[in-house]
Image (tube, rainbow, N blue to C red; front, side, top):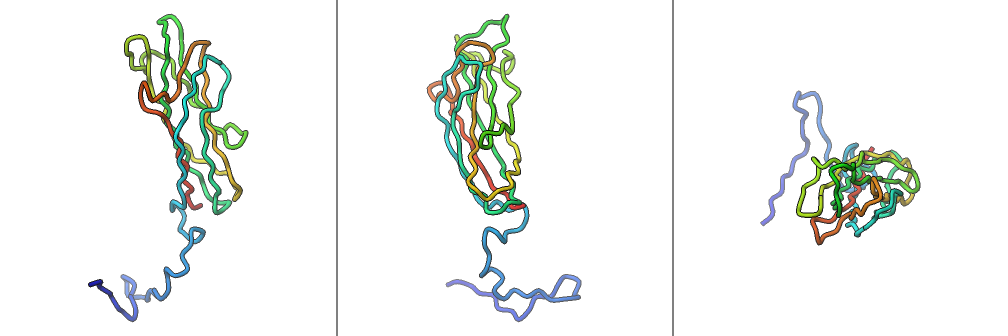
Length: 176
């Protein structure tokens, strides 16, 4: 049996007023949630990118349609980076970039020092994981794209699940 609490009124802690609760939740919508509330979440898994190019190439994207122009979008990105060749004399590695539409909003500093890579036989692996808070100021569908490139012309594999975990992008709309 379900329980119910029935009261005529609730008094404030200091006794100076009352709190009216009648129908408080009946009109609750995403647009009326308090600042800081998570309004929606969109996530997309990565696809593999194998490149020796020093120019950015698309890896994957996710699209979110904000409910309000004052909303913030928390962008969370994780990538597995696999370097197929390594020379201790070269500074090799990868860069990761995030775009909102065609506008670059974040470029990861790049990974290439042997100290950040886990060595396994003839390959080196690491992760690129970061979060950023964006203010798109729109209620139109907004696409966030993740790109990757090699630091020098050698083979870099992003998000190859044969050699480790893949990657993902998660977008959270936060009420502004």
